[in-house]
Image (spheres, helix red, strand yellow):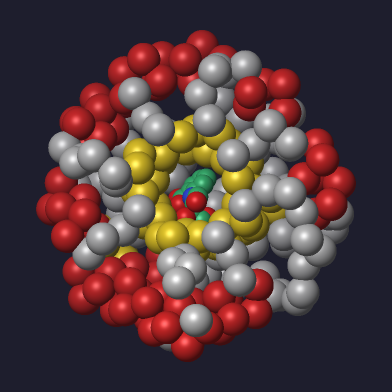
Length: 210
Ligand SMILES: O=C(O)c1ccccc1NCC(=O)[C@H](O)[C@H](O)COP(=O)(O)O
């Protein structure tokens, strides 16, 4: 039976990471984007990542960072995945010899087919609700209209909550779902009950679709 993977993004506290791991989440996202209320330093990101057990993925997030900082972050944190959330081109994303996910701004006008060709080297495409150049973590959904089949795993993000994630899974059948605001008490502070409810909602959705 297919299991929709889950990424909890924007974690800043060891206790939140421990809750995510205990809930069986597949990956956590650590935000290295200045200006985000979920921003963590390289030192904090390295410590949080070091506390992860095997089989729980670590994703570090950038938005239009320079290559030197990306490489510094790779060396310090040793992440499983990079996530690029800005205007980074495919050559830049692929230049670090590390698997990467490219966020696509579904709040703008884009062709998913064209983006999938453009980022053919990406391990996955993250469909988020921001407009081009915008920040993530907005807590807003985009229109979940049918998507063309593309040769890249799709991660659904943007405004997901325990209350709507089942609808998102039913509508788009993503490989994974990615959430930040919807599991928070306030930006950067995750809420264990919301985290637990989110995971339960994903499992219920998968059960209905099997
Ligand atoms: O979450 C942020 O603060 C953030 C800031 C700048 C770039 C990316 C950011 N988050 C990226 C993510 O992958 C979020 O999980 C995604 O945007 C969904 O966020 P939300 O709508 O709050 O669930």
